[in-house]
Length: 603
Ligand SMILES: *[C@@H]1O[C@H](CO)[C@@H](O)[C@H](O)[C@H]1NC(C)=O
Ligand SMILES: *[C@@H]1O[C@H](CO)[C@@H](O)[C@H](O)[C@H]1NC(C)=O
Ligand SMILES: *[C@@H]1O[C@H](CO)[C@@H](O)[C@H](O)[C@H]1NC(C)=O
Ligand SMILES: *[C@@H]1O[C@H](CO)[C@@H](O)[C@H](O)[C@H]1NC(C)=O
Image 1 (tube, rainbow, N blue to C red):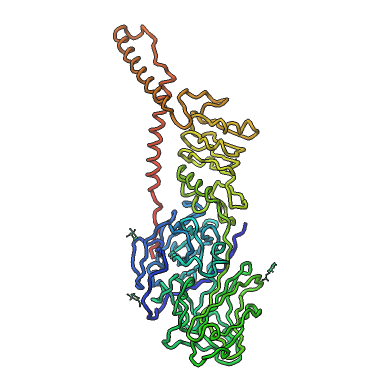
Image 2: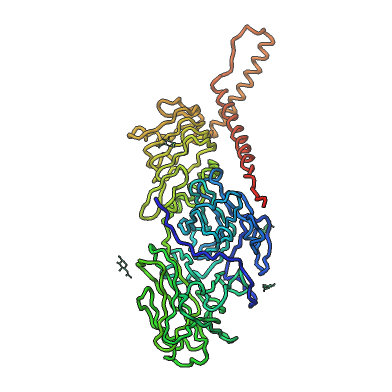
């Protein structure tokens, strides 16, 4: 089991001198900017609302060692997830309606824990592995942090961003930004619902970095655009072009809303007859979606056929471009291509002149990461209900999808199986975990074959639903379960399976266990039972009164007269159990609120 190792395109940088720009527009739809580890909401210099840390499943907060090294407040605090307290898997589960989203994370170490060791961990979105961080990180990244971004589809009402600890390393995250994008954006017919598009380069040619959060330029989807300078073949001399204040029409429309700024600058070659080449790092196991952005912003080109060039991807001629012919002058033109079966990295993107010099405004390169299988929705929600009901402790890491990503372990104690429709849970083993609580009704999906809940302190009765699943092994021994054992469940043993109910003093009603008191009605006392208890209490009190009166009158040893012992004790026992359950819930709640003590770096 080896996680897909994605090479990150990292842009470690200190957002420097933002260029003046047009005021930022409202975002496309829903957006969140979460300052992980931050304790208060704030508004950034660029007028963006940042939320204090929220939506996480656990972890603790930290501060980078040298805060003065980071210009933005959300870059200075972080959340980390020590696996010994919070399990191997920790998540942020951010409420979002179904749709497609842009996700940008900032990850930093900067020796926040004084251990001089940046951690190894994996990151998934919606159960699909997207980033692998391995120690040691490159020095500039370890010190200054790195942004990474991607587009993903969310179908289930929440965006689950999960972190998997490797060995005992605590994963870290410093900020999370989510922007809703158009559901048809970026060739949705191909990439819409089956892929995560991971950014391996989003470049603006002939300009400095721009985009929301970094400059005042607007981009409805929150995208940030890097300068292309570091990705060009350095041997080729280039010339930057600008529209000279003229508007470029046609970029900012549905479904991609490319920012107008992108088309105002471009790069061309100095020498005629020379090609322009970009080299982008890729992971050859994946396919890539490459977007090219063009605009004819040279007013001396005013007819079709005056500037023509070919696009070569890894040496293969894939298109011939005549911008003016396609859209005219000062108008945006984009073209995209899916590069498959790559054998080498970096990916070479070359513009080869046919007539005049080639020109380009922007480039985007996305790894097409196929969505991993996820747990069937019904099974995932049943497991979340179980987690709630059994108060599964944080250390077991029951966060995000119970089974996905498939390259990682499922939730502790859970075994999953791949089917055509998705992942299903086949085994549940929570034995000897000091767990308390009642087994929820509904426990026992059809796919479940083995259930080992032995050696805990589970209370209440065995849910009827367990009897209707296909269980072959049921170990419920050594708990505090009580009441009627569902007959169908007992038949597991009869039909060659294994069942162990021993060590539960309150279970009854099947062979080898005591008969149930007549008022047990499945899950709880029946009304008949309650009336019986009421009546018997009445009877007991009358009898006690009678005894009292008789004893006073006749002296201590005259009669050996006792109340109906069985009936009395089970009535009292059942009341006591209810009380203890209540008390236990309260104790658990107060234990729960003892949070992990935050660790702040003294530097
Ligand atoms: C921050 O803002 C959110 C959303 O506007 C609000 O619900 C929350 O109470 C605020 N939190 C703090 C700590 O001010
Ligand atoms: C960005 O725009 C906001 C108003 O929209 C303004 O308050 C802020 O000063 C601007 N920041 C920069 C760096 O230009
Ligand atoms: C990629 O490789 C597969 C299998 O090797 C082949 O079937 C497919 O035609 C190739 N696709 C391209 C675009 O070369
Ligand atoms: C459940 O896990 C415990 C501890 O890991 C192990 O001893 C036990 O055999 C497991 N039960 C089953 C049914 O595999």
